[in-house]
Image (tube, rainbow over all chains, first blue to last red; front, side, top):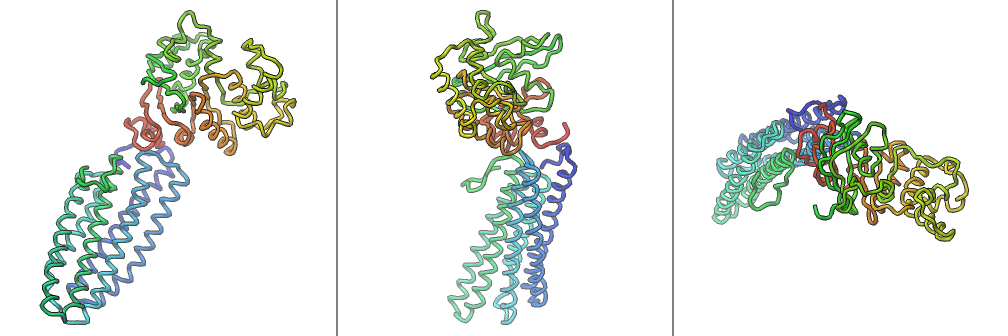
Length: 229
Length: 254
C-alpha cells in the first residue's frame, strides 16, 4: 500500500489496513529484540536472560495469529484488489517469516543454555558479527516494507551473501577445532547450530525484502538466479 | 488485434450537444468475455448501446467514429440496424420478459420480431436449445406454457438470456445483468458466461468489480467518458498500470 495514495472511501477498511501495517511493524520490533537478547545471552553466558527470551516467544506467536486473522478478515470482508491485495498477501507472508525468525531466536537461546553449562570453547567473534548483520537485515526489510522502498529491499537481499560467507567461515573454523580435539565436538556442533540459525534468520529477512519488491512493483523476484529489483 | 470480433475506433457518443464518450478505441476479442467497469455516469452503458445501435434510439442521441463487427462498420449507410441487433444481442439490468407471454413464446419472440419464419418443430427445437444454453431448461421444461412473469428474478434473467440467444447472435451485450439478482442467481449467470463464451463473444457492464475479476478475460476501465485502461483482467486487478484504475478498484477517493 503506497502511503501517497489517497484514503479509501470506506474508513473502516482504511483503519484495518493501517492496523495491519502497524501490527506487523510492532511484531517486527519484538522479533528484532528477540534476536538481540538471544545472542546477548549466548555471548554474555547469561542463562537467565536466555530463559526470559525463550518465554517471550509466546508473545511472538500470539502476534503471528493476530496478524493472520487480520489479513484473513481483510480478504474476506473487503475483497481487496491491486496494491491493497499485494499489501495484504505480503503481510500474510511477512508474519510467517517473522514468526520463524522468532523460533530461530528461541533455538539460539536453547543452545546458549546448553553451552553455558560447559566452559566456553572460544571467544565469540564471528557469531556476534553475523547476528548484527542478520538483525539489521530484519530491521531494514521491515523499514523497506513500511516505506515501499525497493532500493533498501535490494540492499537487504545483497547482504545475505555476507551472512552466508560468515556461516561458512564459522563452519570451517569449528571443523578444525573438532578435528584437533574430539572433546570439543558437543560444544562446536552447538555453536554450528547457532551459526545456522542466524543464517536462516538472514534468509527470512531476504524473503521479506523480496516480498516488498513484489508488493511495490507487482513483479516476483524470488527464486531467480540473479535477483534484480 | 487481429482476432477482435468487435472494435471501436475513436467512438464519440452524444446526448444532444453533450459528449458522453470522448473517442474510445477498444477491441473485443472473439469468444472472450470483456468486462467494462467504471463509476456511474462514466459511459459504460452508452458504450455498449453504441455497439448494437441502441444508443441512437434515444431522442437527441448520436455517435461518431467507427464500430466494427468482423471488420465491417455497423454504422455504414447500407447497414440495417435491425440486422445489427440480431447479430449483437443484449440483456438488460432488470429482467425484461414479456410478462403475459408464455415462457416458450418469450424465447421465440425474437424470431417473430426479426421476421424469421420457422416450422413448429424447428421453433420447439430452438426454444429448447436456447433454454438449455441459458441453463434454464431443466427448471422450466414442464411449464413452458406458464407466463414469463411466473419465474423468479434469476430465472427471468436467464429467460432473457435465452430470448437473446434464440436469434443466434454472435455477440452478447450484458448491461449489469446481475444487479437485480440474489447471489445464487448471480453465480448461475456467471457460470453461464463461461459456457456461453465458447460460442459467443460477450461484453458485460458491471458495477461489481469482483464479478468482473471472476468472469472476464479482459477488462476496460472507463472514467468520465474516457477509456483509462484496457488489459487482461488479471493484470488490471493485480497490477493496474494507471493510477486512476488503481484508485477505483481499491475503492479510494479519486
